[in-house]
Structures are given as structure tokens and as C-alpha cells.
Length: 253
Image (tube, rainbow, N blue to C red):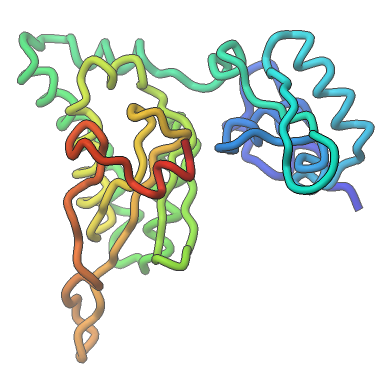
């Protein structure tokens, strides 16, 4: 049975002016790292192929998605769709709010970085009540929801390698490109509010489709008290830092 339009994603994730199935399709493109076929969208959204094809045709005509032919497995090539640069521009970009906060009284790069840390500290203070004594999964739910409200389209999942927090959109990309220290401040913010080890595994600024973090919560001690982090943590594998590309980066790029 087809899912009611607008049910799969929160309304706040849908681009302004694009609601219903068309908005849902745009969000799925944003979340995809490799492009999607019409059949992929039918499976993801539980709607008819005719409905998907109608909206893809309109979105392509509006210049919001691009179409190419790819060979996927055995058989004839298939049409694969992705967001165009105009389509990417539909998603949240909170540059004005952040720049106003950064530049009010700031002078010099160090002052701007300090202002970013202050902003994250204020966000952490806002979350203290919701995160107090919360179990690990609830902490992830709360942090992902808050990041989503900030325009990052965040979610989390359990993988074979543990817990992973993903930001499918960078709401401040243009600012972060000039001040990459902002990304380091975000990683420290996640470590503090989650009370966990955090390791960046992919980075939008390095050309990846999403920013992904591995999350390592401490294992409880024998009496239930917090213990040590499960497994060793390594330095972030960002290309800009190490000169090497993480295997997960290659999969997402």
C-alpha cells in the first residue's frame, strides 16, 4: 500500500516550496551518495512508477536534477538521476545567521574560531536537560534531531563497525570552506554532548556526499558506572590532514 505523501521525512527536511512526493524525491536524492533510478525511488517511497516518472520529468525540466545513463549489472543501461547544483541550492544554508554571530565583535581568525566554539557551547547547554541520564540511543536521537533542525539532515544508524552519525547536508558549507576549524569544533561538540568517542570518517569538504562520524560510547563498568571507550580511537582520516582517503570516503564520494 503506498505510503501517504510527506510521511517518510519530517516536514523540516523538505526544501521550501517543494512538499508532498516531489519534496520527498528531492530529499532522497540529497541522502543518496551515488544517484538513484526511478525504480530505486519506487522502492524507497512505496509509490507508483508512473508517479515517480512524472515528478522526475518535471524536476529535470526545472533544472533541479540531472539524468545520465549508467551500466548497473547485467542488461541495458539505466537512467540515473542526481541533484544538480540548483537542486543542491534548495537545501538549508544558514550562512547569514552564522556569519552574523561570528562577525559580531570578532576580529581575526582566532576570534572567529572562538565564536564558533561559543555557538556550539550554547547549543550544548540547550541540550543538557534532554541528555541528562539518557541512554546512548536516546542521546543519538536527540543530537540527530537537533542537527536536523539546524539544517544538517542528520540521522544515525548501527553498522557492522558500530554506531554511525551522518549529516547529509552542510548548512554552513561556504563558511566552513574558509574556516575549516569550524568542522573541528563540530567534532568536539559531538564528543561533549554525546559523552562518547567521535571519529570523522567522511567529510563533505573533501568531496564526499556526507559527513559521517563513528561513535564509540564507553562500556559500563562491572557496577554499572561508565567505563572506558570500546575499541581504540584513531586520529581523523580527513584528506586535508593525512593526505590519505579513507575507504569509506571512497564508497561515499
